[in-house]
Length: 483
Image (cartoon, rainbow, N blue to C red):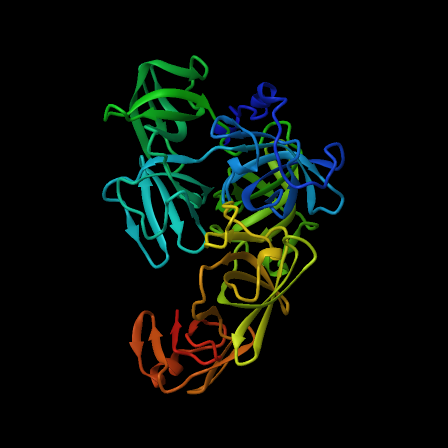
């Protein structure tokens, strides 16, 4: 990984050729104000562009999307992993994007014999690169869907590498008119007519034949260089038509103030990296929630803010970007100060309510029929008490905050998956501060097996994870499962 970083091609080189292009977005910050910052993360919403808790004004932004100039926010989508160069205001929550770069991580067909469907998580490979998608957290668009994944299907993937695979933040179907695939890796052999890569998951890909008219944006000797291959499949055999140097971590040599979102990878020596960037903590590093300090572990999705010192990020703040609580419920009230900052109150039945805070870092996803502008997102101003939402929650003390909010098409049963806070044998279970009662028709599940009430309550424990379903929204349980 460190060897790859020695060959970083500064992403900003493309900007010189793109100056003069401009983007459209929400108003707000002055392009000349604030502190310079480089931000790498996934898009959480629009009306400006929200990445890593910052609302970036895009009025004068230069865009580069899949190696082509973009012209406005419509060329982007929720869940895309992007690099933003810009400035951040003193409030730490708003800023101005000078440039936005997006390039998908992988593009091609799902390899035959690799599609493994699990409980809400499906894994597969594309051109031998491992990928996982999550039914709840991956954004599907442009005809793609979790249930519709199948071998041979050609898709585009954006996401974060977790040390073994790309964890997809966004999946979309490849355009039918395109015969090109894309894959990235480190060059292990090259003779001008063929090229072989080692992928991030350690698998060898190739050798691939290089077409006689291929564009070669690489040095004469690219050994050890991290590159992207564009492969043509129009003849049925993969042929390289373009090779270019790539940035394995999206951080350039001259970046200083940095905000990174990604998945913690164990560096093998009691440390971690995020998106290929190694980081160090200190006694002044801040954690959200505070308990994160003692519980950092590989596989967690986090946001790390700090200052680059050489190849190492000195962490000033680390924030968890995943929760252990999921709630699907009807909205009873919305209070907000702007498009993303506010409180959503959820109806949990029997007069019980759950207040959830949202902010600039909350992912607002909308694949419902209510998404009239088609941007895959929504604002608190658009949410009404007739809507149903699916919310992933974190908790800080007694306060619940939303990591993601997805608007649903229609009303559905209330579903809560959370740690058990209390229970009364053969009577009730308390989750997220709400008491859910059982009745004669309640069904009990233990590790996917149906059991009787006595067996169920002999296994339940405070702190364990339970999932309840309330199909008539009255605070009583039709089905409860222990995991």
